[in-house]
Length: 243
Image 1 (tube, rainbow, N blue to C red):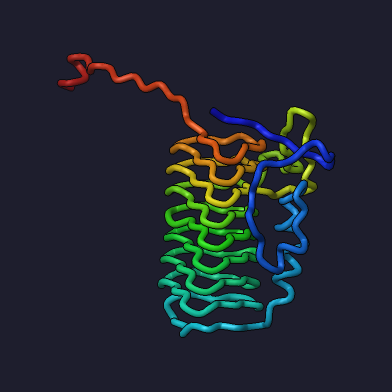
Image 2: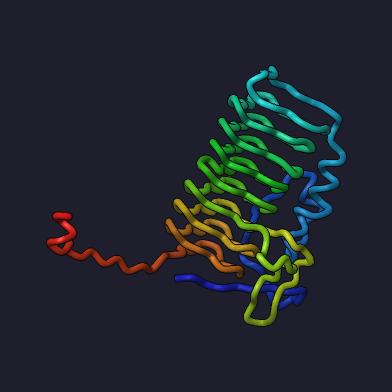
C-alpha cells in the first residue's frame, strides 16, 4: 500500500520522518518543511568552504580527478576508470568503483558506496548510503544507510523544463527548482530497476519493490511500496514452435 503525505508551512502539516540526525554543515541549514533546500545554498556553501585540495589517500593514474576543492578522506578506495570532478567532499572509508562519474558538486559522507558505471550529480549521500550498481543519482539526497537496487534511476528533470512541483492533496509544494531528483530518508531501500520521477520524497525505512515507477509525491515512513503487475504466459502456436 502506498501512503501519500504532504506538507507546507503550516503547524498542522508535517512531512514524514526523514533523517534522525544531520551532520555539520547541514544540520544548521535544514528546513523541515523544505528538505530539498539542502541541495541548494547549504550544499553550495559547504562545497565553497572546502580547501583547494585535501587528499588523504595515495593517488593513482588509473582514475581521474578534475577541477578544484577536492577532499578525500582516509581509507577511501577509488577504482580504475572512475572520474571525479570538484568541488566534492568524499569522507573516510568510501568506495568508488570502476566507471563511476561524480560531478556537479557532491558530498559523500563516510562509508558511502558509488558503484560501477553509476553517475552521481549534485547530490548528498549521508553515511553508509549505497548506489552500488548502474544507478543514476541526480540532484538528490540519500539518508543514512539508503540502498539503491541495481538500475535505480533518480530522475531530476522534467521533459518540459518547468519547475519541480511536488503534488499534495492540499495543494502543490513549489520547490523553486528546475532540477530535483529524490529525497530518501534514512534506511530507504529500492529494488532493482526502480525509477523515481522528479520530486519524490520517501520517508525513512520505506522499501520500494523492484520495477516500481514512483510518481512525484510524498510517501510515508516505514512503508512498503509494491508493484502490481499481470504477466500472461501463453503456449506457442505450432508455426511458432517450428518456423
